[in-house]
Length: 113
Image (cartoon, rainbow, N blue to C red; front, side):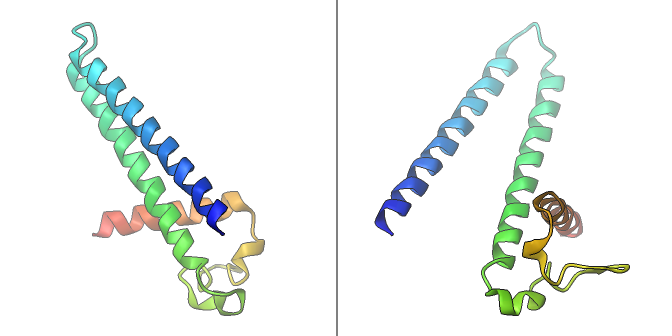
């Protein structure tokens, strides 16, 4: 299991380096007099909001997968029923649909808080 932790550590470092690159990119854009400062700030706000929503969706989905498969119906996604559609065995549902459901749950949660 030790090697697995090392892989995760490298992935975290890659993510941090990408965040630093994006931060530097926006700092350069804000200093560039040829580009409207307000436009740059709005785009930066949208990028940060999308990143935070994506991260929240991933965390919510991870929390739903921490229980064993026999207890899936006790999680937030396992107890969802939309019309005739049920998420009881959500691990068997298409990944895109699960991601969109998690994203929707994150947006609704952020909007109500």
